[in-house]
Image (cartoon, rainbow over all chains, first blue to last red; front, side, top):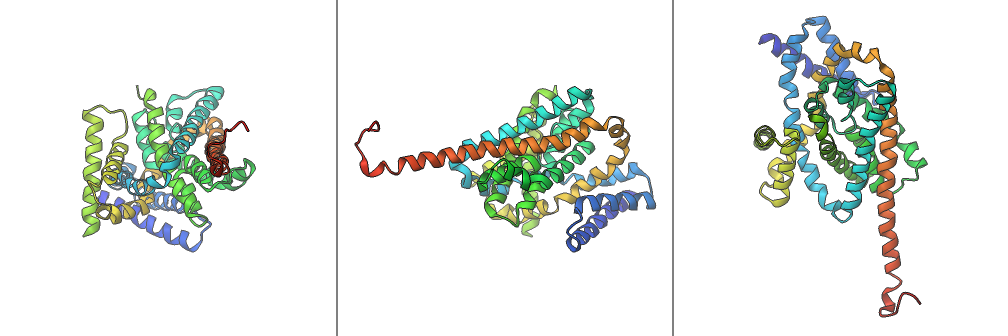
Length: 221
Length: 134
């Protein structure tokens, strides 16, 4: 029990230090810094990974209520997009379908590993939902979290050139494209640019979570 | 105090979503069901926005902390990834690229079409009653 408390302390301290580093040097992704710091600290201090995951589960439990908390931005923005809801739903649903199909087709052509595929299917939705989905369709949640974070980083890096090349110029279309493909990490990158893009991206990433969950129901059997 | 009360409300909705998933066998994750229930409650005014606003902002702001222990545990799966990294790498790069183009193009098309319809409707306004085939 004391060891678990110690693990909790290490994780929280690692997170706080990582956010301080990322605030000072914006080049660093706080999530990656935090993971590396925490992993390295625990490896030095104890290296007992069973205790680590027992302590960690006290922290990751909060992903549940944090997902529920997404209802607040969703409920706030929902009216803003009520008049184009068909377009939003169509765009998000098409994106989610493409995301799932691309994983299935790519893996089928390279050699199909079921556990790996099921850990990747939810990678374009916001991480807490992606984790839960991976869990319920028999994927590995830790891998799903990693793939989801990487998808967010990669999507954010090439968002600007791809959107310009595809002539996607409307603020709402940009927001929905980024939210559906790069979830919260992409949304955060829009924050400094336009409020409308951020709002559209927030709605898109949440709706994408709901739509992807529906699309993945057949995989849970 | 407001944050604590708000977090209690979020926990109640999370619990309700989890139970709905388990007992009613709804094939959606409990946290997602909880979120949908709270969205409904907020839109209907059963729960007031200011009861949960602060707590929700707090949890969303620190969401990253909650992933850290999970992703730090990923090291033990590195062997599994390195066994066959190509499909993983390719889908990580191709996925967001395609999704971005498809979602963005669909919404752009929808918005443009709406704009066109509005533009077409306007010039006809002062000429009401005139037939369109003119």
